[in-house]
Length: 183
View 1 (cartoon, helix red, strand yellow):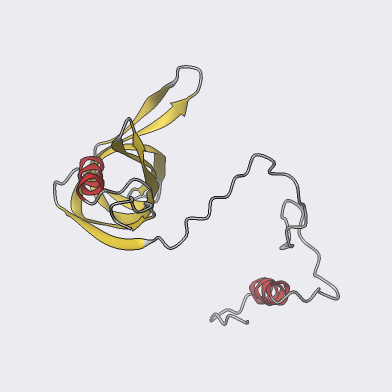
View 2: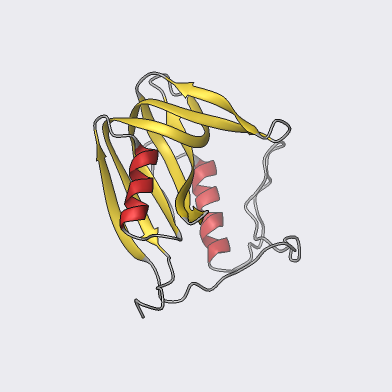
């Protein structure tokens, strides 16, 4: 795959071409030298470095919902209410939108608490990912969020609350196993 730009930077064409060759599984005969401080594209060859990894086959699950929040809505509360109403006990989500204010947290393992990261201005939601599970029989929403500001700077952390400024769209995939009554 070759990408054409008006100025045609040759390093980009070579990198994209190399990526296309690696993606097809064909080894490069002679890769261009990589500048100091950079890492070239290479396949992951190491194995056995994730001994704690667990895999759970979820079977035939995966109903998808689009949840749209409007101006002023609080997202953590809304997602929790949504999960309750739709009996979601296991799921994951992604979203985009904008906040007028939000509270994020940086996990401090020594204090076993979140250091507050307060957002008190318009911020664009650049990344919003998380899952829905249960704690003590109730829905539990766990999410991380990155927001962007007009100057291009960002802040991120554990999502605690967020008030929508314009709109927020969250796509939820329900992976809950059906109860015996639903089978």
